[in-house]
Amino acid sequence: MIIDHCDKTLSIKIVYFGPAYSGKTTSIKSLFSHFGKVDALQSIESTVKRTLFFDYGTVTFQNEEWRLKLHIYTTTGQDFYLITRPITLRAVDGIIFVLDSQEEVYERNLTSWNELISYFQDCIDDIPLIIAFNKQDLPDKFSPQDFLREINYKKNRNMDSRFTIAVSGEGILDCFEDVLRLILRKFCKHRLVSAIN
Ligand SMILES: Nc1nc2c(ncn2[C@@H]2O[C@H](COP(=O)(O)OP(=O)(O)O)[C@@H](O)[C@H]2O)c(=O)[nH]1
Ligand SMILES: [Mg+2]
Image (tube, rainbow, N blue to C red):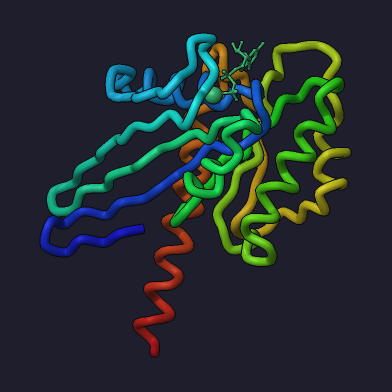
């Protein structure tokens, strides 16, 4: 998060993370189409439409005084470009972990989750994070409870989960608003603490 008092701009970075093919690019495209800003989205893709480095775009909201500038990224799921993932995650304010709910790729989600944890270690609990159970429209899904139990998920002030269907846009905006709410709540809390000190 960057607070520019001269420019009156609050900049926030949000990253969609998750295994390959889980629907990160589809989710960010759906989000930007909701904002009517698909053209503002930059995707660096290979010739076979796979995310090479990341998808990136910004959305800005303005009130009378302050501008809220949201920098939104997806990571690439391709392991060949693994090195780019921790770089994309640098200075992140909030994460949407997009997983593929199909039973057959359960383990792939788990591997991706463990990779994410490895970048943050214990401080993952401090990062606002929404787990998006994507591809809810497909049959043969695993139980979300099983996954949450396996990752030792405890619903806390910085973490929550949701169901999404990125291809139709269902749940995508809610997910995004949830993570933004968690980020701003954390930010206000910190401000309060520093005011007391
Ligand atoms: N049925 C279904 N397919 C989806 C959904 N979200 C993404 N997909 C498909 O899954 C494939 C991979 O999606 P993509 O967004 O490129 O995944 P990424 O690798 O995580 O960026 C594409 O063919 C998408 O159309 C969903 O909610 N339902
Ligand atoms: Mg992608």
